[in-house]
Amino acid sequence: MTKHDNLIGGKWLPSNTYSENRNPSNTDEVVGLYAQGSVDDVDAAVAAARKAAPGWAAATPQVRHDLLEEVGRKLAERAEDYGRLLSREEGKTLAEGIGETMRAAQVFKFFAGEALRVTGDLQASVRPDIDVEVTREPVGVIGLITPWNFPIAIPAWKTAPALAYGNCVVLKPADLTPGCAHVIAGLLDECGCPPGVFNLVMGRGSVVGEAIVTHPDVDAVSFTGSVATGSHIAEVCGRLKRKCQLEMGGKNPMVVLDDADLDVAVSACLNGTFFSTGQRCTASSRLIVQAGIHDAFVEKLKAAMLALKVGDALDPATQIGPVVDEKQLSSNLAYVDLARKEGAKVIGGERLELDVPGYFQAPALFLETTNSMRINREEIFGPCGSVIKVADFEEAITVANDTEFGLSAGICTTSLKHARDFKRRVRAGMVMVNLPTAGVDFHVPFGGTRGSSFGPREQGRYAAEFFTTVKTSYLFAG
Image 1 (cartoon, rainbow, N blue to C red):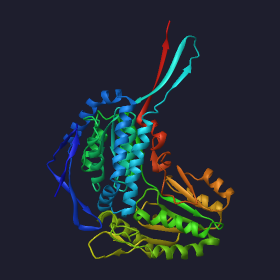
Image 2 (tube, rainbow, N blue to C red; image 1 turned 60 degrees about the vertical axis):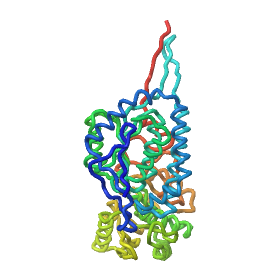
Image 3 (cartoon, rainbow, N blue to C red; image 1 turned 180 degrees about the horizontal axis):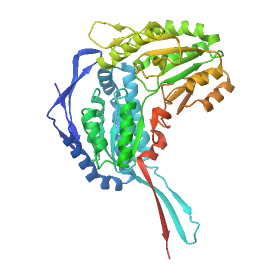
């Protein structure tokens, strides 16, 4: 069994312990053995990044561009192989795994271009004979902590802008899915990334993640994961007076109005609620349906959901892969039981036993629910969707906004008036009209409001707000 080491200071360093990365579609298969880093490994990685920081900050935009462009090219060339690895370690269908790998390639290529477009301002002073120049500079050493549900795309969309803007990186991927982050580390090393500019330390969040967050030589932390961990990171970074960027949970509403195209609404909700096994922070977990279309919508969505094929992620016929691990599956099943106890009518949601051992769950639809139920307040993070019946558009807006989260929101309607009003009034960072709440472009900002996000946006040109700091210079020539 191949052992995969940490990358620290340009060297692949072995660990005292390695963890098994198992395939959730077939738990008899070990994908690989991955290093379990220590606090000492984090110290060494941060020291390497700190040593490399002045040189990388001074590197020309062309140097940064060429590195990121080459990584993006190789990701695209090898997308099928890397997508297969992603599907084996996370459980996404092969089509989704390859698609996510291509997204990572696009991200690297986009930020290769952005490395050539770091701009500033030359402004007139209010005083005579003085020039004012506003420039953007790297923040320094950035700690990146990424989740298991997008194991190649999220490391890409944090790493690429960090490097494009001249920062050095210490990346800790999710312990459940280290393989894809190891791929990115390997490509950066293969493409000539200078030693220490990018460092990979795999391992437990309680050990490696905590060491990164509390390290005195880390200048900023970008995190995607749970609300509890994000809140802890915000407290630590506030105490240490360092920048942080947090992407956390969601309980995203999808409103379906009486005037919606029924086929469009069902397609958008089926995708947003159940695809990727519902393991997306942007998933449509609350389907808020107006009374006039409710019954027809429920019948058509139920039929479409029950027809979905659950199975091995690598099977071309599979539409819904496994849940990522036993812990997540147990949590999902507990919420299915809770739905029944709270009075919901439950369709599906049971654990499935297939030909090989794996974490398979039938998608679940909760009917006759209210927004006050726990199943509609707490993020489930599985293939579970709740239907909430409302009387009219105004009640739909009220219910949509009645949550502690605010990541993504959607509406299905043929009314331009209602679509326009919804976009303005819904409290969410991203709004979809006649589209799934999950599924975003790589060149525009990503993020939410309230309990979903904290700090500057990710992706697109807005990434510069987190990964750079602004300097204002005054010059008097005499």
